[in-house]
Amino acid sequence: MTQVPSVLTIAGTDPSGGAGIQADLKTFQELKSYGMSVITTVVAQNTTGVQDVHHLPIQMIEQQLESVITDIPVHAFKTGMIAHIDMMKVIAEKIPKLDAPYVMDPVMVATSGDPLIEEKARLYLREKLLPLTTLVTPNIPEAEYITGDKIDTTDDMKQAAEQIVVNFGANGALIKGGHLKGDAVDFLYDGTSMHTFSSKRIDTTNTHGTGCTYSAAITAYLSQGLPLQKAVEKAKHFVTAAIKHSFSIGSGNGPTNHWASREERVKR
Ligand SMILES: Nc1ncnc2c1ncn2[C@@H]1O[C@H](COP(=O)(O)OP(=O)(O)OP(=O)(O)O)[C@@H](O)[C@H]1O
Ligand SMILES: Cc1ncc(COP(=O)(O)O)c(N)n1
Image (cartoon, rainbow, N blue to C red; front, side, top):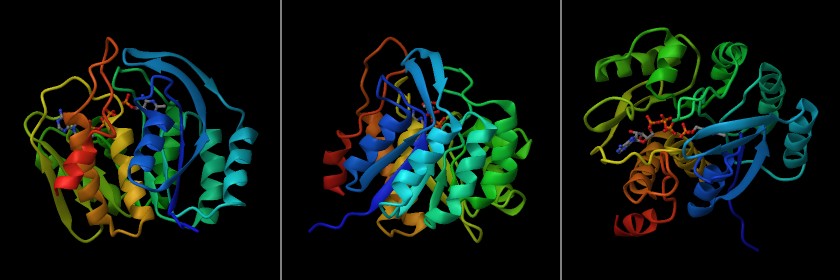
């Protein structure tokens, strides 16, 4: 009998397949962890933006979590879009039961600019959920929201990473530089030291779901027992290859390619 690490995502959906639960499950599968999902919100969206949302009832989110937790071990988990404070509260209650590394992608706004969570939920995320995380992976606008400080330079990014750990209680913070100019540089502060992950910027607008894919890859590697720094290093290679081989489909920001990175991974 084969034993595989099992990994859970708690997030919203994307019927166009580039972001949210769909991107997470594709990533888990590609990286050979057993993928499971709890849906918070059904989102009608595509490469051009968000057309509609349908939030699931709180008790349904709670029941999905219970159904997974009471049956299958969870070796690592991530959260993505959690639109309402009440959803966050039930998830926060279950986190101690999961007893596994927790990666939070603090999803607030889609690449298209559409807001994905309410203001009260942002505050709860910052005050209550952040201290429960093994790693939080904000992009620049999300890190600016969390710290309240503007980020214009790589020094500002490093400062934000440190602040999110020291002042806001996350165990680790990875600030993603996709929104700055120049190379795509991310900084990880793990509570002790700062680590840099850098790649050449790829000239593309196909970036729908890059944040989801990156955090899902980190979660998959953590479920396999890799230490944090190594998990981020390998996930950075994965997301870079997925952007490099991304699909020009749809009329907006196209999605990344989860499987074309196989060849690149084999080469290393
Ligand atoms: N054009 C690019 N070329 C190479 N790497 C990129 C590019 N854009 C983003 N990245 C990298 O992709 C990862 C995701 O970063 P980004 O800052 O785009 O996150 P995000 O804003 O949460 O993503 P999303 O677009 O899903 O909202 C990071 O490692 C970042 O450095
Ligand atoms: C359900 C869901 N979760 C997260 C994102 C963010 O991804 P992106 O910023 O790449 O659109 C999204 N669009 N939809």
